[in-house]
Amino acid sequence: DAEITQSPRHKITETGRQVTLACHQTWNHNNMFWYRQDLGHGLRLIHYSYGVHDTNKGEVSDGYSVSRSNTEDLPLTLESAASSQTSVYFCASSESIERPQHFGDGTRLSIL
Amino acid sequence: ELKVEQNPLFLSMQEGKNYTIYCNYSTTSDRLYWYRQDPGKSLESLFVLLSNGAVKQEGRLMASLDTKARLSTLHITAAVHDLSATYFCAGANTGNQFYFGTGTSLTVIP
Image 1 (cartoon, chains in turn yellow, blue):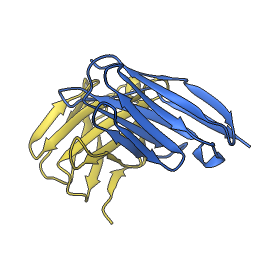
Image 2 (tube, rainbow over the protein chains, first blue to last red):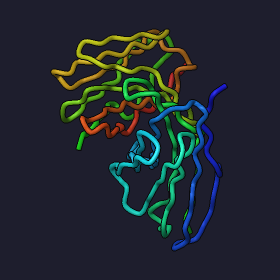
Image 3 (cartoon, each protein chain N blue to C red):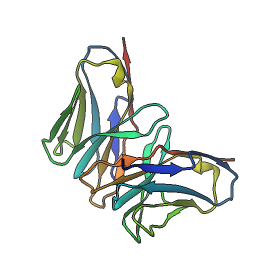
């Protein structure tokens, strides 16, 4: 069965470190998204991609970057981790904008 | 920026009762999505509404979209305990950015 997997599931790191969260999907979807989920804010879009070599900034993109070198993967990098980036991060993919997004299980990131 | 507001934020209801969750959005949105999230889990897609007047139903849940009123509703019929979860609506703007509401935490009491 096709799926979308995130790794790691949990991570603790220190402020100032570079952190990369992995997202891999086997749906062969062109569209991929990164969100962060914080209490009281719902989910907020960080970056998204509509295909290989395409990346776009979302609502809360400062301090984050993504790259899309193939269809399956969209890694999210925190260039210099800050405590304000402690959150649960979700990756999602979809066949098209008119189709629902499939979400990964999330990565819980704590920055101390 | 598209603002999406849900109400109520918290809902406690008895089994067998009906209730509606409201999702208002601030500017034109071509599409409206509903998701369910169980505690500590990922999000599960419920409905995708693509046009004014769209209505979709799955089991005890029915979603509708009124683009003129900038309103979507999620109606729960004869609630059962298994429906306890957090429900999110999300809209997409013309730039295809997605904006989520803060969620409605639903608890169904026996």
